[in-house]
Length: 298
Length: 228
Ligand SMILES: Nc1ncnc2c1ncn2[C@@H]1O[C@H](COP(=O)(O)OP(=O)(O)OP(=O)(O)O)[C@@H](O)[C@H]1O
Ligand SMILES: [Mg+2]
Image (tube, rainbow over all chains, first blue to last red; front, side):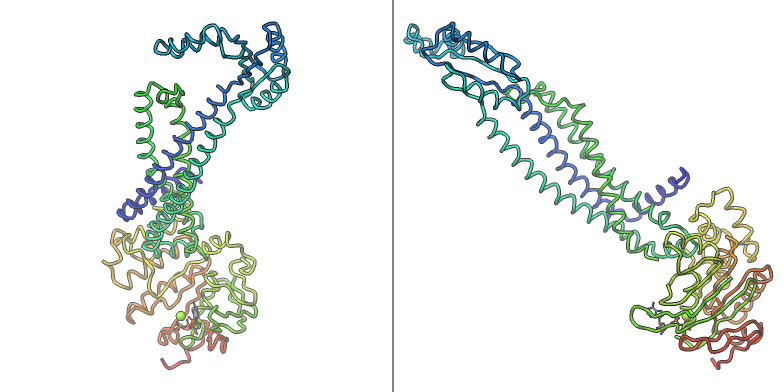
């Protein structure tokens, strides 16, 4: 197709849209609302994914040693853990150190309580292990569990499982919602275009009689759909990008107190634009094709 | 040029419009198609530009094998045929010029070639001075001339007309017929379904009479042969 033809099809598409102002408005609104919700869902989903990656990356295995393990043995175990495949870092925390850490963490208010334990430290020695790949965390924990002298191993599995289950739920609800809205938007677009086709039956009839190709006839209606899709994507994209930007700035790039880093605005906006404009165009093209289909039977 | 071999047409609702048509029309001929209402004249004509497809039989038009013609290629067939109808089929919001130009525009002819060809066609039908008028501002005869200019503008080998004078008074009908005669004189084949007895009997041409979907008469310089 030449530029000249493209120009004509675009012009025709715009003319039709203006001629049926209210239907156009309704279709664009439907697309905009759909994409607004989709975009919001996407922002949450992307950040949730980021969150789960982050949490998984932070995941540590805490191996507590038996009380009767001597310091030399503990060093020995630490070395063994370090030798396990897939382990990126190992830190040995003797019970004295653990006690100090606890003191520091609890602060002044609890000093009295802790004082009572000072010469009878109840904490075990601890080895903190980090996996090179978060996915390996569980299998590494399993191997450490089998080592002699190890009492208890905490791999954080429960926390992560709960988090993932929650994220899955959020995602599924989002998907159902968005699919429903997309279908509705397509329906509205195809109806809008049907009306413009109806008012142009004569024109299409003549085009066919004088030998215009089906694609030539189809293009203005496709551009009509594409325009609806793109215009319908602009506003919700702007709203979401701006809202996200504001929230991001206000929170200083982290989520609440968890110190979880949010996705930077520019990076998120890129993905958002791709999905929203892409989907807007897909909805529009689909609506256009559906509506023009039965009018083109020769 | 136009060839039909044992052509049958039954519409989906069961109406048997054509029952075994054999016809051969050579280049440059002028043919009237006559017959009572419902005989199948329009169907006969629609088969030629593939508005309808035959239930059975072979059709060749301008070298196109209608039977084998892919949907994709139908536009090429139609560009080799000009069609004219009783109701003109002009676009009311477009001027005379734009109506004719439309036929070139939608088959992708560049703008710079369009103007010249449209003005030539309007000139040919004698309406160059009404180029900027809307159909609603023109008489029926003038509107039909515009429609003919549109059919001609792409230089088709055949003009197919279904009752082109059906909506016109006798004087205007004669004007239109003179125009068709001039078109035929330059070598364009003309196939015209008509109910106009006076014209058929005065401007004598080949007459194909269809009754109940069959050709009952086919003669050179024939007569209309019906009373209406
Ligand atoms: N689209 C259609 N669907 C079903 N039946 C049709 C269709 N078009 C025509 N017919 C039937 O086919 C037969 C022939 O119709 P056609 O229009 O070809 O006749 P005609 O000779 O052109 O008549 P007229 O002189 O009134 O224009 C008629 O019985 C008509 O009812
Ligand atoms: Mg008829």
